[in-house]
Length: 100
Length: 100
DNA sequence: GGTTTGTTTGACAATTTTTGTCAAAGATAA
DNA sequence: TTATCTTTGACAAAAATTGTCAAACAAACC
Image (cartoon, rainbow over all chains, first blue to last red; front, side):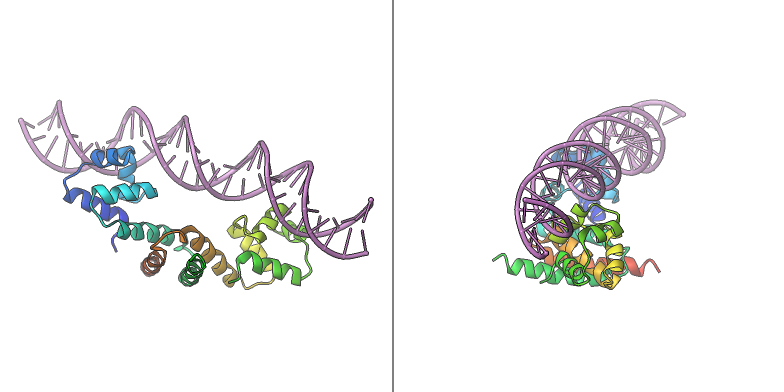
């Protein structure tokens, strides 16, 4: 299964961009972007937006990758991780239904 | 939909326990427990374990409530929240399958 | 070989977030 | 009122996140 970092790195190399070029666009040190691609740092939401722009990746898809990886990382160690996610879906739907 | 805090408060009152009694068992200030019950503070994992003991609530169920609420709170504002949760489920299963 | 360019890593500082403490205010029952 | 319990807000301590920098590493080239 492809990680967010792998997606970003592959896309960057396909477009022939250097770390420092993309990092400058994100307004972060290239060390941070390298770590994001290697999975050693979590990107911020702003990073994701700008990455979707410069790498021309669909913004919503990238956001889904970002959020799902963050969540999976948080709870992967729990025995009840899958059940918690199912309940979380119900709660999210409940919250969204009450916000209309 | 019942919140974690509501579950805890109802159960504590049913058992006739005071905030300071439960808080002492958790080894936290009663102010913190009050805020947890009101939903103004997130409990720690240790809090959850001890709460399940002293309030005699099934530990796994309480952990599911805790995790799902934490996740739902984190991403409820996102348009793609539900989709992210579905992808997160796949990732969790993938991670768990590769840890055997 | 050495030089250049790009990437990765680790130590550290700055910042933000989380967690705990305390005292005072509010609520309720006697 | 008085006593007890709960809630709140200001603040401090601790932990996690985020950024900066320099050096190490890797690959391509002379």
